[in-house]
Length: 133
Image (cartoon, rainbow, N blue to C red):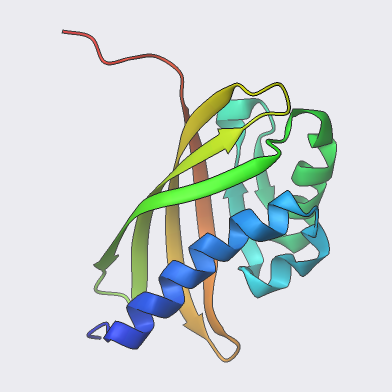
């Protein structure tokens, strides 16, 4: 499968749309981002691995007090895989209510579905320590 420019735009929009939905608390629209059987790994934040849309929503609702007020996604890199999925790696910047900020890496597997491109697997990894020599 060769990714077209339209595919790349659609996948990038999908990843970018996540921040807009999270910032407005629209967790019920998760189906526009994820497959029904999504694996959502937020174990690095102590929330485990959630399976399915309901699990991904529950993880978001359980962490309302610690959610950023602004999610920003950048540095999206897409790589075709041999199995018809796309590996998407991106950086996330979260701005907290007190003005502090944090950084994460989103490690996604994306698949074309009848409804369009959707994330089937997401790992969210925080970046907490600077690089060392």
